[in-house]
Length: 308
Image (tube, rainbow, N blue to C red; front, side):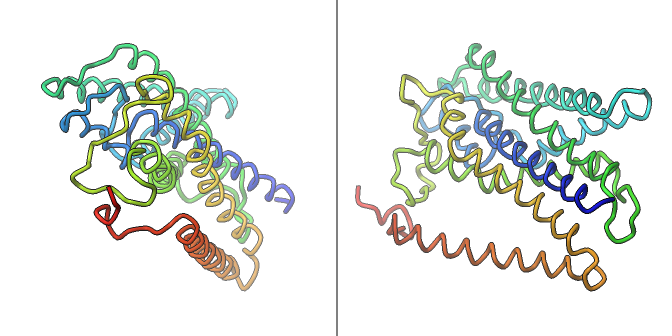
């Protein structure tokens, strides 16, 4: 494979990963799926019934791993048994993954809401109708991009050292691993900007959340009672793009170092480049954290330090 073509594929994968990370985070924000989003499930029990969608039946990593692996499995089956083009097969596989996400979203929302009837939490059919389709749409984008990345790694890219094509892992397994990865980044990166800034707007920035305040969510938006669509509107400004950039950097930088430095010191150049990237990012993250603390602090040790 020509170096220019290899770098083009790396850029394509990085772009697809950026889109996947953004859509995955927004899907989680709409569905209130991951921690601290799952604080929604406690709200009714502590006297805060709401109209926010709640499908916190599992964390984002296993959920996205399931739909991405299912989408890749369907695409692989179609490519092996029919003459359909890979792009159409990936699109159909992503649609199946989105259907799975919709099914689990409906059952989890109805089950959780009905179980909290004693706390005046109801099943809102308009919430179910409007927001499930939005969840499925974002899940489709995520699955399509992840399956596309996995397809490129499996069938298109060439090992820079051996010069051979293919990947030692099967197509669906690669999609499962990347699904776990995008879900984990959505939990660690995107949820910070949703849970701290949107769901708990009544608390000062940087104060943390006391255990006694679990479930004390902000239930009103700019115009009336809040819904999960309001959360997506807010998170699409920063939380979603931040997650997309984080996941895109992971995919791009990892494949960039292995493509560019594979022939340096018999492959050890790629390892050294990876360690250097991690070190630089860690130092920059520390510098950014200290800047934020000086600019927006002080950050108390616990919420009780803040004056009422």
